[in-house]
Image 1 (cartoon, rainbow, N blue to C red):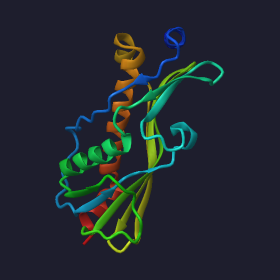
Image 2: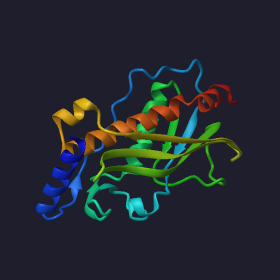
Image 3: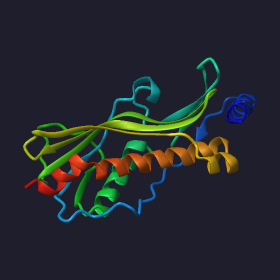
Image 4: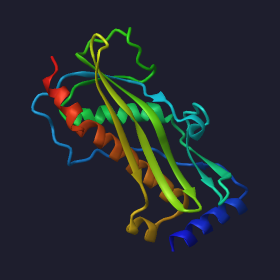
Length: 210
């Protein structure tokens, strides 16, 4: 069933002339994220785009693709708003929910010489940020290396975080194509953000740092 539906979507895109698809990114806060007893203020810098070919080497609008059985791309999937800008905002919203005051620097990546006013600095090197439909089915994947520094630039923590999702049974029964690609990517973003702000090691540092 999964194979057949994926094949139909690929065929429909091919017949439509391989037009690019648009997905809208929107973050819904996870109500299950609990606040820390005492959160330490942190500065969140723009994320480093390390997706390589998956992101067309730095295209901030590219968030996935549709491919045929030979791995050839039939369509790009694009966001109308640069995904790094939105992801910084999403993480800031989740940190606020966690009880952590955050300063967002969405226009530049972190350099160890950067002046910051908070005790901590959080950066992310994004390795995957995509929603895809391949011959084997749908997949959304957001992953990266999350690093936490102190104010002087000393690395305190380095954590790989990954949210890799397939469609749920309910999703696959009710939606398909562009709508499913969009919904899956937003779920993957929300899961990635949740994992970052609730990671045990990072959480401990967000409480204990001075």
